[in-house]
Image 1: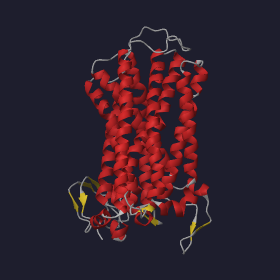
Image 2: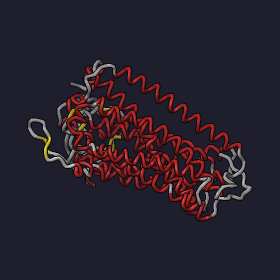
Image 3: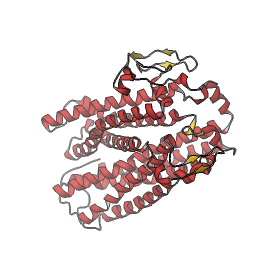
Image 4: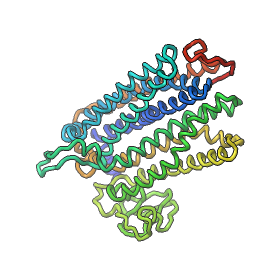
Length: 464
């Protein structure tokens, strides 16, 4: 049965509703999770610079960014809570059968979540009440908790792509359960660093893009330059590392998830000398590719460093075991295309900074930086599509089909609509609060906390 027929059959069932709800909530939450991972580190860097160099602007940035961090954490708490309920309610067979294998990471994630919440409150409270260096150290547990919580969730997702830590008996029961082996499955060694780097790229470029817009509007003071440089530098340093990790992850996928890799590269027949196809779409019935640019031998060369490298094709598995190739392939192209553009932007910045210790003078650089945050978010969403859609039709790769794990309860479309309304409301409130703070910061032309323990004595004019 073709992918179109499968979707048509699913449209009247719970499968399509559940998949669309998970796609919406995961796709939304992953952006907030990126800031949960990276923004505490950005704040830490600004705070450390402020203390070590007596830099009033850096301390002001750290304080203001910490307030944004708290708002985004609150919004993320709502979206993350919805996801935790969805996992059990929409996919009861997944949790009922495999929960004892891969459920422990969710416990760890909850512990990291509460640790992060506690120390965010302490950190915000401490700006006017704690001595500077003891106060600085309260941001460190926030950064560690953000990294730890993300590791926990990505480990669970990596397990769904690379199931381990159990033995499946012929009657469907599980024996020899080893949660440690499940957590440290083969997938975490590429998925965890890939996710971490993506988070720093998204949060870094997005934060920097706000100050790039301000600089394009004429606000070229040191405050805006520093507000741009700290997050942009972090994102720019992550970009080349991301390409190295991504290349390793792609070759690992070719070995361990060959069907997903074949969809990503639009490979139909198994064999060597497979071309790298840029763009284009494939007929899922015949394997014919229309449009696009084919680089002869490119896919084989990139996979095994030789055009003789054999790549398994989609035709080697039954149609019902294939992911939708065009969705996966085009999402991969978007991710790599945007990533390449951001790598070029990072190299531009790095070269000019190395030569002049200054930003590129042309406004085209700032224009590109101003859209880099949106571009990075789009690349992350595309990468998530490759990961999740590429695993289909499996919820646990090779073990449990998505259609077999979905709930039989009704009313999912209604719940989906309610969640969309909830998310719109929560995001509207969060954006309104951040915009209100930004307006107040623009109107406040003096550095904050002049009378507090930091005793900032500066007449420098600032704005946000």
